[in-house]
Image (cartoon, rainbow, N blue to C red):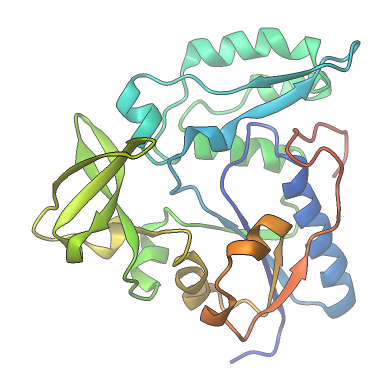
Length: 261
């Protein structure tokens, strides 16, 4: 095994402009790289399905008042259950948002935003992050990548991307692989039989199994994480990693829209 440091951080797509805590992870990783060398890897967890992850809080460029925006979706199934790499961009949403941006502190990025590819939410967010310079010198690895999924270790707790009502849903696999479960909100769940076979290319981890699944491929030596992650990471699943707290940042859940990262 190489002794070259592999400095990782992970995050779901977290807004069409990156949240400030994600930029803090990037800055922390770059500072660490300047001290110990090695490469930086962004584990882009675009398999997540929660539409709340992409809420984007911007501030009015005159009043400074915050406003939270988010994508719109073609239908309820796609919004609630499809993974982020399969939630499609709505052209009318993009056009509306282009008209709104001059009112916010993100207006300096308007020309870049206008030409974003309107494919899916995960691609859309990632390309904006790239155009802002966040990913310079960073290798991006996506949890939706079939090749990554094939290489990853087997896990007992996982989701599977399965056909559902004309879309693809990310369903929790339970009951020894016999049953699929969709969370409808609160304590309500919809359950239905799992297909006879689920391939590794369909599987993505739960929060508790994510670290071991991710590191079985990436072989991180250092992992940059926020205080929230510190609370739930099962460090015993990857004791070989050195865990590094990201630098502190104000208004961490708001979008980062400054000229340089």
